[in-house]
Each structure stands twice: as structure tokens, then as C-alpha cells.
Length: 266
Image (cartoon, rainbow, N blue to C red; front, side, top):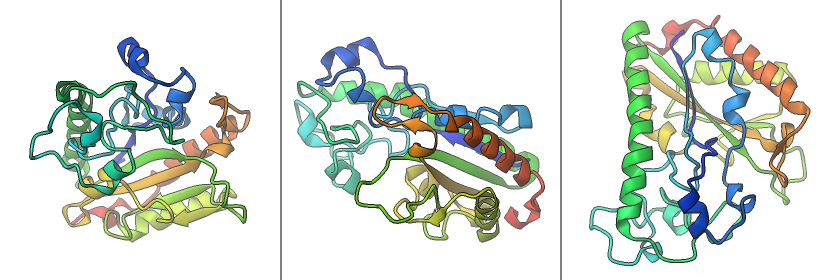
């Protein structure tokens, strides 16, 4: 089917040099991971669906950002004029090279040279997007359309006590994916008992907004999965619920095989 599954934030291969220069211990530095999301969708290749998963960690280089969203305060010299240093993500400390982990702790003991960021982007970000772009092009050529499921996990929010969602579907407020495809995913998740919300609080990041071009028959739907469904967020360990969730997401992919894909073509 014309489907690609992507997991840009589940990487957990931490370079020794990076860990040595980090202020954080081995567990704290993992707070930004979408841990085990690649495993949740591991059945995709057996169903004939490409699964693209970053092995590098998000805190090291974030593939769901523009390539050059960098915070000037992190570096030991001026940045090139073409760097985007004014985005809201940079302001939050979560640019292409993150200043903090998701829980707010600073990552580095020192300021970095720009060449360090440049190396990571060229070695991690660019190959990931080259692979994703190629998969989209090959899928569209073969089927006339492509749907990318960009898969993530979301932490529990202490202030959100009343019926928090199990999953959030982000289509950039209707601009990145055909409504019928979003509804098909939504209805299947509802039928399995999950609480599903659209675009709140996650409408889609760089991948969704950059690649989602329905008029060109390329559709992207971001899926955020509540970590409480399958993992211990403090210990970053799998919970027994992971087995059921894996099974349900495998069923979701199988259900999409029955969809009328002609609605995605232009």
C-alpha cells in the first residue's frame, strides 16, 4: 500500500563523546526520547510498509526540526546569518540541537563550536531526510500517492486530569493530510477503545508541515501516543501494556490496507 511509517525520535544510540560532555546522567539525558515507538510499529515491514527509524537520539540531533534551527546562546561564536535562531522551538530550547531535555534540564557543560552542530546535521539530519524523501518519491511513483505516518509519543501532563487523550492525530489543522485518511485512522483507534483528539496539543512538526502536500498527493499524519499506555516514564522501561498496543497498531496498519487509496491521488 502507499504508506510509509516514520519514527524520527525513537533513536537511542548515544555517542560516548556526547555523554561525556553532557551535564546529565544516563537516564536523564533520555527524557526527550520517544522511547520504543519504533518497536510499537515493528510489524510494518512484514506488511509491506517501509519503516524509517532514526537511530541517533533526538537530544543529539532532532530530525523533526528544520535543518538549521539553532540557539545562539549554545555556541562559542557567532552563527552564520542563514541560521534560523528566532523560531519558537529555538526559544524553548528545543531546536535542531537541543539546549535542554524535555523535562527542562540543560544538556551541556560548555558552549559548542558551530562545527559540532554542522557535523551532526550533515551526519544525522540530512541522511534521515534523504531516506524519507526517497521513500515518499518511490511510493508516489508506484501508487500515485503516499501517506506518511509520522509516529511519536507524548508525556503525561500533570495539569491534564480529565480524560487525557490516548492519541493525538496532527494534520496541521487540515492542511497536511486528506480528511478521509485522518477519519479512517481516527475511527479505527476509536473502535479499539482509545481516546483520540485532533491537533491539540500537537498539530504536527516539521515533517508534517514540510512533506504534507495533499495537492501533490503526498499526505502526512502525525500520531502522538500517550507513553502511559506502554512505558514507565520515570524508569524508561516497557510496561505489559506495550504488547496490546503493538497488536492494536499492527491492526491499524492492516486496516489501512483496506482503504480506498484513490482518495489520496490527484
